Length: 596
Image (cartoon, rainbow, N blue to C red):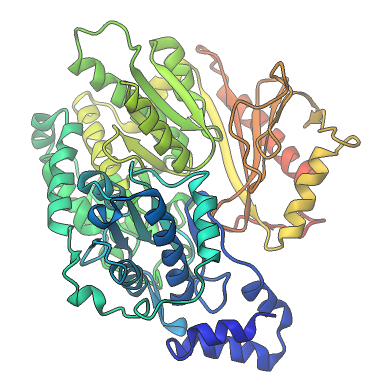
């Protein structure tokens, strides 16, 4: 086992991680040592992400140094002008005392690795929202960007998110080549441990003031009704930053749009790496984790709650009307309608939408696709993960197209295309303006959502997950699906309905294509299978790219005029339960159901 190499590489730089390994050795925890030392992290849908702690499979100062040394090696090959372009580095507010890790320290070590190789580094002087890093990469012309964050993951985790020079997250082949370079760069360079180097190096600069100014200035391009915003003084908003980075930036964004500042949830306004007031730091979990926000809104008479996750790239929204917490798919229907409405208003001379696009991940609602078919703009799907959307935005922009809205169902939204990544700060203030506009029409967000569904047809969806901490079990579950009725034979029934289409993004199989090959890119490193049923329900099972979860997604797309929504909801509920029970076998596989 690789115990001695790890201890040699970290000693005496981090006594906490050394002590963790020594304690595991002393206690004879061989399996835990094997998990930590016999594998390395790989790039998922959000870069490298793992628990903080000792070991090559964990986030710690050594693995961050090794990752950045590999990044340098790859970037130096790819960019002859790396010495003039430089690298952007940002970080969130995570920290764990038991292993001596904080996002700020890991960011400073990242900067030190590049600085000791004479690469300029734009290191933010304080915590920033994740979208500020790709925005800075584009504005500063940097070769790449790194954000140290684990977004909405549990407090034990951290991550290393990498952006390419186009501002989008890295995808193949860059991710694989960087991993190869990391494996060739495991011995720390003498100055790689010097976290004080950013304080003394002339090659380090702080982009905070410039990027914040440019971002807020460009954000105003998404403001379409400034007069209405100023007039809507009766509409109050509450904002929670979930103990993360979002407070000061959301406050500034509201000011840009002419709104009074939203009322902050005092217990969650300031950074807290322990996320003390929530059971998990993910606003996607809904009302149970929004409890303090909803209580404050009732006390203050605020009708709308906006909540950004700890790194402010996701957004949850709730409206006071027996408190409706919108799902990601519902909020996307509203935002998609809003962005199209305002695009039409600002382009009255345009009668065709040949260059207008909206994007969504394939596990998200088909509502944008339905609207596109009616209104005439273009819609495209991508694989799950905003890295696919970001790169698609860059490709379409190069061809002269305009992407006005993109989303993933896990409350990730991008209004416009100023950042090729999801952005909770801009989405929060766009939602506020939409709510203010609708209030002047005597409409709530929920009422407008119903108007959208009545126009284009109800799209009823259900998204949830089970937890599986045993990778072999996950592999066995999906192998069973691919051999359900014999070798290479997928299931033919679900919930009593015939399955008419199977698309397997892991293997590239799609029985609906003439050559039986999926048009989506093959992703062998993750599991994802989609079933289309005879009654029109679309169901997907996939592994999370950031957590030990098997996620499931189902959606019923009803035609316009369908009024018996309750029966559709019941049918979707029944089929979803059958999907989980028949295909995942939760009891047999010891799967842990969603707890909140």
